[in-house]
Length: 158
Length: 391
Image (cartoon, rainbow over all chains, first blue to last red; front, side):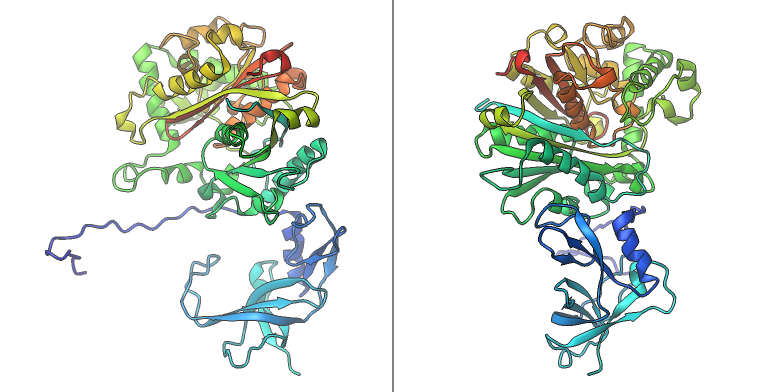
């Protein structure tokens, strides 16, 4: 590897350092239930008993009303696109440590009950993705109760 | 101080070695509920809780902006403000008090959380506190720094390891009366001496265990504090001071920064004779040697003589100044959280709500927090109930 130098030809000394802080995230009962239900190809959110808003993915409390969530709500198996972004710069998937293939699409969607959320879009052609279009989930063949069980969302056939 | 400040509500979790069944929000939310239900306060700047101070650490939480998950709990989106303190929790309390004393806010919530168990090793996190060119290469971390300081302190004053081993013994004994403590029980100095060596002269039972937990409290200015509780606990003095980051710059057997932090707190609270004027103290002892060491820094004993104060029973439950009736950090409070736990314990003591570890008739208390390698940073709070002389 060629030595890096400054404008006057002096060697630039650098220290290459890769940082790692391995650890374990607790799922907790709320996220645990959500992940467990992915195995059955089911999406669950929580409803606030005060404002009636459904939040997906589920939360411990309603951030608007600051009360415990009242009940579990099974989400419909389709949603509609609100907005989207096709990403061309590569990023690391923090769960695998590997580079994510580009391009990939972030879809912002809304369920029929009004819960907004974002996830991957399988379609990367911005001409084909339009706000208002209907999307359906694409599931991994082997599901282990992990976030990656839900691969992403694809445009529904009209 | 410009305006009087009181803690009006404070709650802490049980401290566990691994709260594997709770995420950060699940650990903290019950405490926020207790504090808001007790005071009847909502997050409405100007008419309720004005501002939030959170306390946590990015590396322990494995996420930059470790206060992110706390947003839902402390009123994000309600147009108040939030600041994060990434050092000992006593600083979070101090910061909240300062925002009220200065007149910026009337009511402030403090929420501190830590899950040391989440990372594979606490030492990996504290290793990253050191600069990468030299100290990291040498494998420095906080545990190792404690060992170096303990060696330096014990050697300087000729104190034996056996004498220091009595400190975790008393902590575990006091902790038996604290239902929230993690590591308690009847142990002997022999048990401490033969426990696993960690970083000489520090042994396993001599070092604070890995733990998870959280603290929530609400502070208010005087008029509002009076309306919110019958038993306000006034913060009558505070101070903090930090020493050099580079261990080699410091005389490790003396704690100038603690002396300065204490002096500032004593001056504000009008304390000239701490042993006589304080009724109870909760100090952050991460490893046994720190207990006598901090006594000296706090001005309770001459340098090298702190251990005598401990040995003659002055700081026992029935002594002149009971220290760590809760058992303290040696019974298990995470790094960063200890100062907030100490302040909460003082709050309970001054309200006569400490249960089996209550110091009878306590009116004035001292809470202490420490952060950084080998006691680099110290924060000291003086608290008092209505009889304990609010300023």
